Image 1 (cartoon, rainbow, N blue to C red):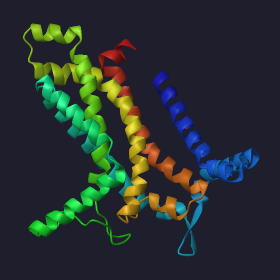
Image 2 (image 1 turned 135 degrees about the vertical axis):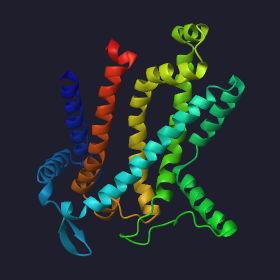
Image 3 (image 1 turned 180 degrees about the vertical axis):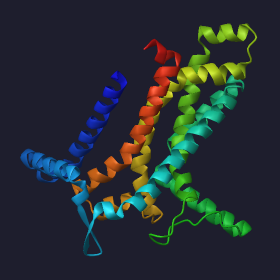
Image 4 (image 1 turned 120 degrees about the vertical axis):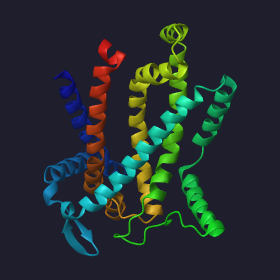
Length: 285
């Protein structure tokens, strides 16, 4: 029950934060605190009456909830796909990397530090150029490099672009946390008893680092949501952020962000409950 109350409070605070942030343009433009709170109040009322909120599509006023679900689930597929692939690839490569000599691990970490410094737009451009180059050399079109309309959906390119930097962040953080955990007494004791290093790494160390990785993944998710806007603009994707940059009202921004956050919040809540129940650190709590 304590966990449920805590998670409900976190959800309410997250929604409230989004509503407060959505009103900031009013404060920045007019430099009027009263106008800011009036705008926040108006946004809150729109969120309560979300089923009545409208937007303009080619000069026609339409209900927001009537049109949003297709683009919404399209964007969620891209986000979920990118996050899942980035996490799984990073975890598998972390297990493999920790089996290598320390000098190789150091080289890998230095390379990951370099990759972290790459701008998002450069990564997106390199992916596009790579697909074009493969097509020119082999005649094989791996994927379209842009959507041709609202009904034309591409997945490979946006998911690939969106997962590269999160994969780098996950990979580096997992290596650092796992290396730190491998130096603890229980690991040395397990290895001294004859347990295989890979077994200890996968079934004990990974479990004990799961809480830290879990909390780190929340910041990665916010990074991915911010990059989703760039990905959908660059590749002409008709997703949920299409409504954000074509109708840049605070209430539209708040509605789209809340819709994006809620499913991930529910998934993270499930993982947090699982970690707290089954991990050693969770049991200690």
